[in-house]
Length: 135
Image (cartoon, rainbow, N blue to C red):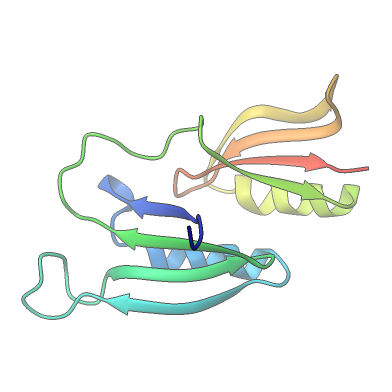
């Protein structure tokens, strides 16, 4: 086995927003970058210029993203989340503030039995995030 990577497919209302989302994520977290984006060309099954496959990193972990304008019967689900271990209160609060804009809170930022500070939310693209203060 060569590798395992999380792949985010932007469908439905989010179709065509893969590049926007990964620019947002890579600007928020340190040690993150867009490695490359392959785009659909003229005459292909997706709109020209949309992301055929994008490779990017968030804090050094590699991810994939793509756009699909086909009629899918699914979207992102909170049961599959990006889990982020934050090193400080300011880091978790800032990540929460930025990711929550236009999104929805699933579990409020609070102290829980398993964590002194934790929040679970969906961002404006429908991607689910669990932010945990790691002490």
